[in-house]
Length: 321
Image (cartoon, rainbow, N blue to C red; front, side):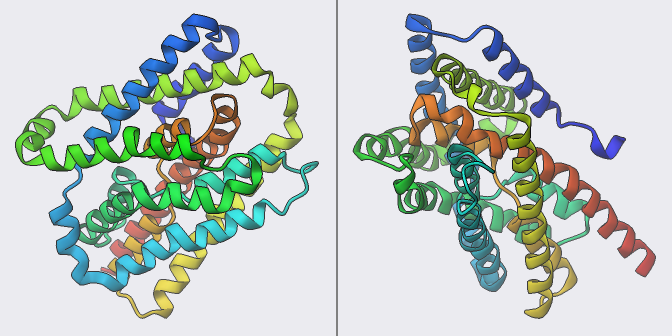
């Protein structure tokens, strides 16, 4: 049961969803939460920019074959699987949930969990740091572009106002954080614990605002238990397919064991921390609740399954030694 323990952050998100369901914000209150969310997202991406070491990521480019495989998994293989999901009839999986699966498929990899699982499994931690950082740097540009290309036909694409929002709320703060890193990087490292609380609090604010809008618009009446079960199955199949493809692909390409572990864990993750704020910028408030639901489910699944795999990899190395 310890392996199936819920991530405390996921528990907090689910509790926030419950509060939004029972006490949704509306009217002037909702408008205030919307403004607060806009500010919080900008600050989040400023901190993301200040934390990520561009120099470290660029220096790691000498291991370009490994990073290329991870980026191909993150921004090519995943989107192809997401597109396949959109072929399911709406009676099986409603259109907005399918769009949510496609949205999660174009997100960058996680940073912290990718590195943590690679470390537990005795993989190439230095390469994991570089690869996860590169994925997030690339995702600032590639994720909105892929959303515009792949979701424009579903009424969830990027219009002119969304492009402006991407620049003002995501790209500009991120670049500002990168530029300010030389002055505030040490301070951010020293204060990582309180800043982590700010990160998570901001994401909970995003979740409450999004799900409140969904309740106000009545979108939850469109779902039933069957749709949620199908969504869970889709997320499991997608994760399993990517784990298999990255594992066997890395082996066929001749990577050493430590590098294969890095490819598996960096190439199979999707970032909840980046995805939720991005969704508020890219999609309308009424859409966000259903759009991010697949991401929330996939995030928990990837933690459970990859934690088990990391322990298995570590045990195998101990036996081999």
